[in-house]
Length: 124
Image 1 (tube, helix red, strand yellow):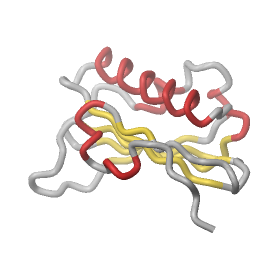
Image 2 (cartoon, rainbow, N blue to C red):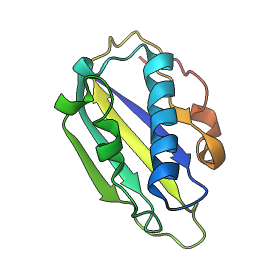
Image 3 (cartoon, rainbow, N blue to C red):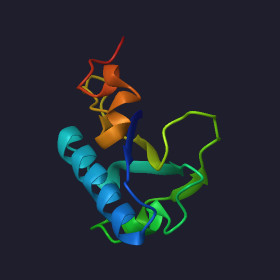
């Protein structure tokens, strides 16, 4: 079992903006990690308190094979001065321990973890 992290941001709190950002992030996570939903154990989405137009998990359920993935949405803890309009993801999945994981940080979220924005070799 491995964990994949990611995050993205939206410019506004609308259903359309959140749908677009979530789909873009999931596309990148699946593509760069050669990941299929049937390998996923669970997915947690967190959003900052300024996003409430739609649940990211509701967006993900429209993707092929995602309707059987256990998902939950939670609100990210507020920290003064932190990145606004941010959607984060944590995926637990079955991937070989020798596989290089690509953590995906898009848009303004790319500054959250610049060290993880590129494929990183796993530590033994």
